[in-house]
Length: 172
Image (cartoon, rainbow, N blue to C red; front, side, top):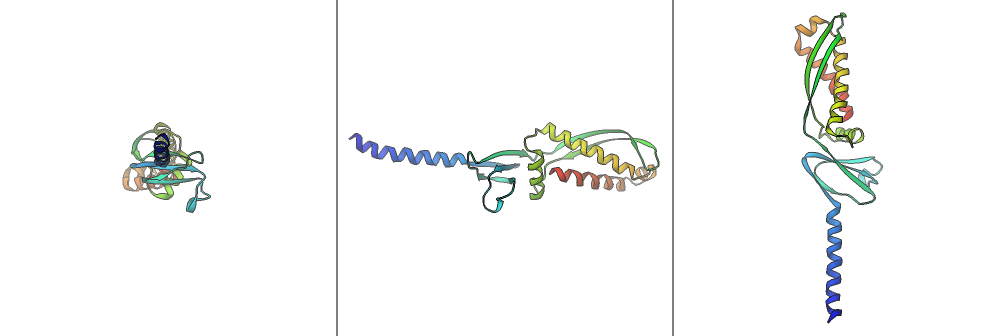
């Protein structure tokens, strides 16, 4: 009697254990976040430092790989730039607010995985603030006060071009 119960129960317990182990290996990622898998990567991702995925899910092999998530939620960065020097050596104040977010573009997600993984939202905002501050100052230095005041659209394009290029290096 005991042998019959054991021959039925043991395979069921083993199957249940294997199923739970495999289910634990699957990590889900919502549409508002990026899943970053690092460690030993296989297949087309072999040789890369990390694999990124926007939404969905992936299998993560315990002890060989680890995973983390980066939020795609936009955040605001307030810049109170004062005393920036224009092209004709006039100091100006440019208070501004920028909205920044991680990109779901695959190349930019990889950049974010390399540079921002492990940082909280405040640290990411601090890094983006430093980049924006420097690029805003650089854009102002290339324009005269008349250009800045007279053609706001050209000024905004110059700022956007400088800021986007540098933020893209961070994956933002």
